[in-house]
Length: 287
Image: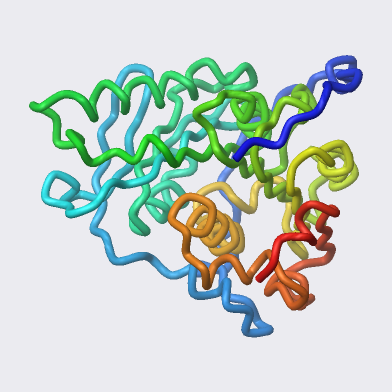
């Protein structure tokens, strides 16, 4: 389903680009599973899924996927990923493998400049070709009807840009940079910010959320998180992103209740989230 409206003035393109976002590994103090101290059901999605994983490093795209996909009895949804400035997929390896362990095929762009989304779209093209190739382990195992996009910082802006692609059903920008126009996004969006992020401050992510009134949009601000919390050990970002994609791309109804309905899990989990907002279209979606 696509929600559309006429585009408003793309004022974000006038903002000064973020510069010198050199990613560094965070301290090991981050929560390894993303478990919520308040007992929100999203905590379960921070635990690794049932699939052993594998990695294929290519020239344009690195694939993270269920290792035994050739023998799988199902098709697996796709997540395309964009890196932050000066970063490559290996920086986010733990998060991307986490998604693969839950049954997703993750196509991560091998570029430190993801803003335009060109290499992210190439990941969809690659998996389309592999899915039709009888000699590929991905043959007939890629669910191209269910595709999500995500990324961090500049890559988060890239995910917003890729959200205008008709093949993309939903986007999860993590602390997205300013150079994107959310008016083009066609499906539901989960916008994630860090309470203590001084590089992409929460106010910038809230501006995207406020502008995304043509699609169901949820804003979540992780308590105590800075700009590098997602790097290396994904910590508290693993559970909500996995829950969102499991509902949007796999139809997991338990994951749905984390975001929708009157008592949504992240809405009541005040120990994990410093701010949660849902726009009118998201509030209308039942649990």
